Every structure is written in structure tokens, then in C-alpha cells.
Length: 162
Image (cartoon, rainbow, N blue to C red; front, side, top):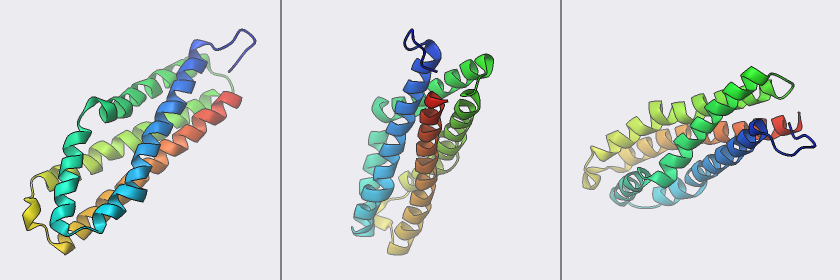
């Protein structure tokens, strides 16, 4: 996609999608690899209260902007690739699909409802079994969206060399 004249709009969008999906994947990876294991070491009531606080803080522009701003860039990149065609188009289209379904879709369909259920629960009534079940379910789904975001990153990066 890079020509002698430098970076065109399609390449700029693809670079932005690569960076955005990598950023979101990294944030989500930190939860599966660091935050959730740390919370699992706390008493269930403390873990639930801490995660409730994290979920409230997550509903702000830094995370939401990265998650949904990247989705918008992925959509724009897919439209441009579909119109332009070429050897990079299939990789770009696949990257967009993987991110939109595997990261954004899983967030909306799985992680948000789990967060809402946790928010509706009094943290001081959380049992060890209840926290373990919630944490396992949330972390599994978070890992799916992490892998999807990072797979999209790889697809976008590969498309830049196509």
C-alpha cells in the first residue's frame, strides 16, 4: 500500500487501524493477564468492589474512544479496501471483521452484560463461588476479545506489506 509518493489515505487508515486494534488488544490483555489474577487473590467482596470501580471508570472517553473509535476506523478502512480492491483488501476486510465481531461484538454481547450483572450485586454479598464464576466467565470472554483485537492487528500489519 505504500508507494513512492508516501502514505495515501488507505494506508493512513490501515496504520490507524493497526495501532488502534493493538492498543485495545493490549489494554484487554492486561486485564486477562494482570488485573483479573490480582483481583482473584482478594477476598470476593473486595474483588467485586474493585471490579465495580474499574467498570465505572471504564465508561469514559479513554477506553470507549479507543474501543469504538477503532471500530469506526476499521469500518472506514474496510469500505476503502472494498472499493479499491487489490492484494491487501482481503486482509483489511478480514481484520475489520475480526475486530468488529470478536472485540466489539463480544464486548457488547458478553462483557457488558456481565459488568451490568456485577453492578447490580451488592459487593458485600459476593461469595467466593460467585466471584470465581463471574471472574472466570468475564476473563474467558475478555481473552476472546483480546485475541480478536491482536489478530486484527496482525492482519492489518500484514496488509501493509501486501
